[in-house]
Length: 165
Image 1 (cartoon, one colour):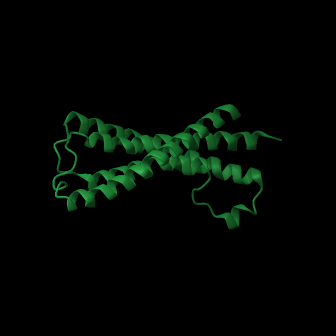
Image 2 (cartoon, helix red, strand yellow):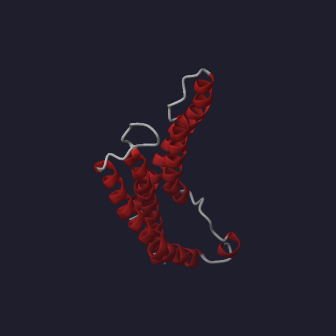
Image 3 (cartoon, helix red, strand yellow):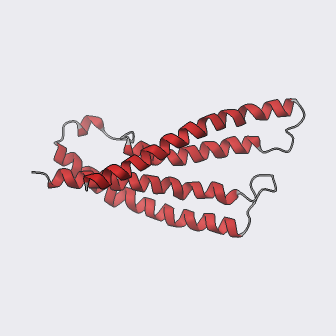
């Protein structure tokens, strides 16, 4: 069980780090390129503003799993420091099973359906002729899938803590 938790946690962390290394420079380049092209008279119909926003959105969605796996999500540290490890594990397990995992499942199902519908309808991205809106929509279920993996890893660790004597 510990190995499974480690694999799930590492997957969420590594994908989040990779997305940050790729996404942050991409956002900077796209945000800088737009005014330069506009100044040169070449950027009138290019969607660089939307592209940098899309990169930010994708990075944000991808970071959910990383944040949960790294323990960077919101906790009441003042209260949790006073609790025993078993009590913290019970709270973590309850939160993961009753809140995080059902939320991820709903968003994963609905987001996948939305992305597929967008793909089938050849929905256009911004003011361009590119039929890539489905790709942006697909980042939502992808991000919540990573969050789900991290939550499962956290739940497995909590179960191991509660099962230990």
